[in-house]
Length: 319
Image (cartoon, rainbow, N blue to C red; front, side, top):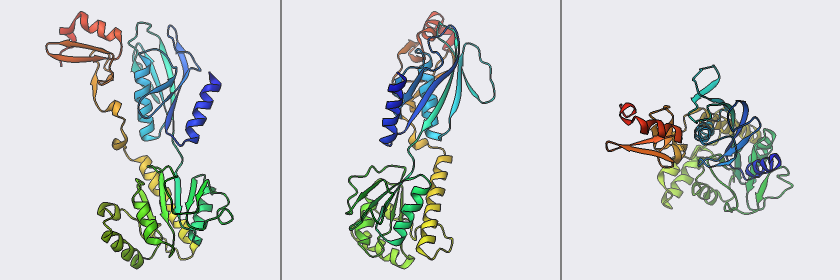
């Protein structure tokens, strides 16, 4: 099972996917989960592996999705009695077993990907610097060769972006500098990349953007272009410009990681109801345990909470 787990995680990392790893690090009997049990939680809330019974899984999924959103690991405890402790996210165990689980959750996020369009001196230096700090780097440019970009992860010798996986962690830098500027920038703007920078002077960038406006490129996308590319550090040489661009990418990436990510919230957490017995938030769309009382629906994390509610619904149905 451990080999399968490592193989699965390695496969996801190579594919550039986000996921969270949950590992049981401590337990108090009686409970089904044991130290070393582990699972992978995907951004859609699905789980691969095993960390314990039905009471533990919804909590682990919920906290794993939070970890994927904020990029921070966490240690959670699921126990019969609440005992708040610094550094531990505490949940009440409602299963009949009544044991305790401590589970460590670690988000695994793809490293930033710099996609460079062009083979200019700035492009070559940026590719080298990007690899030096551990980012994934790709290049697409007519006439590009491995001699000019020896260490990059992937390359297209044409302005063809269809072979690249482009997502929120992709940073596109157009550094064509006279070799198909309009075409390269237009193709960059047709992707869903949140960061598109154009290496050009303000005057040239204005003319290129005006041209693309006439070509009916969406105005909201045109307004997102960062031109001139990079932070304003009075860069002059190709090497200095490359440094300013990389600094801006680092800044933008760090700002995203620190900001609340409500827009990335998983659909499984969009409609939640509070379990009236234990107080746990339950995904309404996927809830297995549900009761009706006086025309209202109540959702539960496990069968134990549902049974307790059904025995005295008038007691627990109060606001």
